[in-house]
Length: 587
Image (cartoon, rainbow, N blue to C red; front, side, top):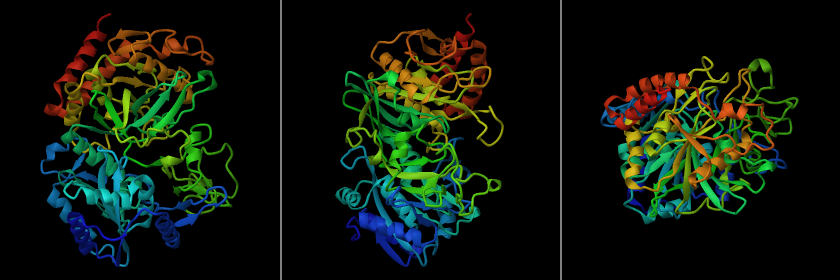
């Protein structure tokens, strides 16, 4: 592809080339031929391996360095002029200091390598709510992944050409020497710039994903009056043929991707789930006062372990072709495998580091192993996926993993209470987590690692939407993980979660029975369809109940958490905590 006529873009690329000194510069066009060439370069590097062409056509396995397998939040910084703007939820670095530090590492870092220039669009190409960016990188793996995850190449460059004065996100990435002590991911929101060095993994290197679509986009969204959120977007089609859209945010290990693609059980005949997005939503107020959401991504970067025909058959179908697998195991005939994919482990596996599988070396697939696949390959993809205006959101769900505290579902009392529920989302650590089991970790709106500015200001931005519209979606909290005294999950989850979604949508339409409590509106007995479920006697009553004593202790913990944000905390949230505490004390 020929270099751009956009003078700002051309000048910046030239500047980055002078800094990193690549042997050649390749402007990506997004074509099939280019993608094949990128995959061949990955294979030629010795880090990539073609998979079985009969079972997984046009797919490959990539193995990353064993020290480079996940996000590095302690090395991720927001660089703003004022330290207080990033809040206690982010690491801060002064911009000039940040540039000086990493530019020394970038100096000459691409010598002997190719610089790939990747123009991309986050969101439908025709959408006024989409945003443009350009990433330069020395990694063919990054370029190939960005081709799947974004609208990348000639069409993206055409939008940049057509909007020469519109700011775009500038991302500089270099794998460097992969030394963890020289690994940094820096964000400069005031200039829409990202600089990442020392990692080739996922969100550290695919700068359109968390870096752009959440950290910088959340900053932009606050300035421009919209929301960039770590949310799925799903459609629920009723037997009458109506489709209602839900956005939902859950912390890690709470089933967000699975919910986005659930298949309702036979007992819920006539209900169908379609997927607009499984990870990120950009929301704006439409002319009718409703919130509309677009998915800024074009692909899925999903966690492989645990994905199976039982847990997420749609995702499994989507990754059978045209996909990139990272750090999974492979069978002797080069089919990808990971823990949870099948009941029995195949014989003679090669593990994620290329060794004959030995249980003494740990899992066959790395715990954070991934697949990258086009969203277009999802059998449940919504026909509204590319709608430039997005889809109208009827309900927003927040949720966490709580064994005994949170009920199965509750509707918040109003928008302020809904923001409070989102701001105080929490999960209890599981046996799969590092550290003690059962520790409560708060993850506001599931955005703790991704909000690009002070959480206090972020909460205030959310609260401000009630001044923009009186037609906002209702907000709910769900908890699929309530346990009985034996430690077993009470609710079956997975496809049966559509039963809860039906109650949610009934409430959005002025139907569905509920009772007001201090913590929100709870379903009344019988208002959630449980016909055909094998629940123990009294299980549903327990699922829709709440313990006042536990909730009083919870409110004390929440007040301590909110105090971290000091004078930047909106007083409405402090007042909401006081209201709930006061009402809980009334017998």
